[in-house]
Image (cartoon, rainbow, N blue to C red; front, side):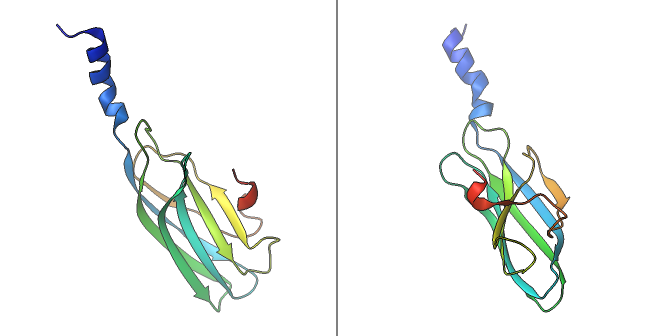
Length: 130
């Protein structure tokens, strides 16, 4: 018969494994003028956030479709990943040139659409994002 501490250890092993999920994200970047932007999908961690994937776009149009795909991983004893978008741009429609947008925590693979434009989504200056 197993001792209680050993049994608890064995039962907690699945919770101790790091979680990894595949994320596909797409949407429209919208600005009143041609622009450039860097979009980074980040995974929030207590000690240093992780870059999941990133793209850079330059356009002479007012709307640009973007697509991101990557594998987000979280550390031991976590059962979901906490994602956010970090957008650096030169669109004149906004007060800041860098914004962050939190995405819900995910425990499994996800495909989502996120349109990025002033007034469409809640974006926070990354400085105040913590």
